[in-house]
Image (cartoon, rainbow, N blue to C red):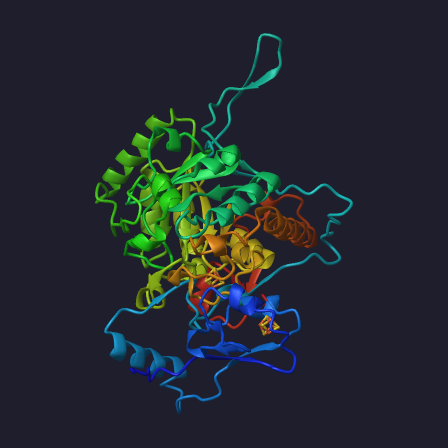
Length: 503
Ligand code: SF4
Ligand code: SF4
């Protein structure tokens, strides 16, 4: 029998003295690590991805999942993972896939930025006692307002406002399609979005009929595969997004294999059951900014100019010029997806080596749009690596109107960032279509957890604003004077438009 030379990453073991042979680990593991051997649980540790579902559901804490102590003799140049991946490639000849965001130790600039706080001469605000405004409006803003008095002498706004999305707080959920995640996972996002007054995004997989009740808090997406796109779909949500790229896999398309296309996914995507859902790398009718403009206006026509149009791009080297073109093409929102953004499936070689971080991209885009005098023409959503309300506040200070939450939302559903989403075996019922796994993700239970997270971030953001002495998130937007850099060289500080700590 062929035995892989790639060492297992993790070793699962069961303390047989503690084990009560309830078989819950067998039922809970999506990767079939455990099986029943007649009188005890057998373990196939090669299959373990350390998603920890078994650990959480073992009633007697009999399970231990450890890093494999038997390592290759690694050095600073050849890590355990380099050697292991090469052995795997030598055995399969394939392109290793991965899920979630880049996990290589590139610098995370949010961790090199610190926010200001009020002391002595500039009073802080207590958010528990003073009103604090987190409301955020996404969409094109007028350059100036014209107000005239009506016949009764009352002031009236004459400027015609373009459609806006009102968010109760500057958060939206990242696009995650039905197919890449389960319907229950999408329901959790939709229910929470409605409860907290924010938005979920369908991703490229269409809108399942069960989500229509949440349509006032849904942004629908049009990607290169055009899955599920028809006039009803375009008008179902409060905004439409054109997906050009994704931070985790810039420049390439998507591929949802046929085995992940059961009836409900197929119906929602409007494709036959069991066929591969291929999203081409480019949108085949967009090869220039003029083409993009045509699609933006086609979607505006289709939605009777009632919905803002967002354009989502991966952050790449010339992101500022691209964003400027997108705004000039008529987009109301530019969604910037940094290279640490998550994915259901991507070639590891693309995810880990292409694109640029959201922090650099955000600062560059905000600068460019301001220099060109078109910053008011579109809102900016920052995505790809937002881990906390602290990251969100720093992203807003760098220039974002709102931030997108992806992986953090999945973590509230049980995800342990094991990175094996592409297998479709997620034990937590998130990135899978296997009915026995998806059924375990109860929308009521996990909806409450996700709501708790958003509520907690709202409070944290208010605390930050209070400490900064401002009473509206709007006042923090693009206010880089309230940031200082530590451990960053002058070139990096210059790109970010931030002073070093101490100045
Ligand atoms: S879940 Fe725990 S107690 Fe139950 S069979 Fe597995 S190891 Fe034993
Ligand atoms: S969604 Fe599931 S498979 Fe993907 S990283 Fe999280 S736990 Fe692992």
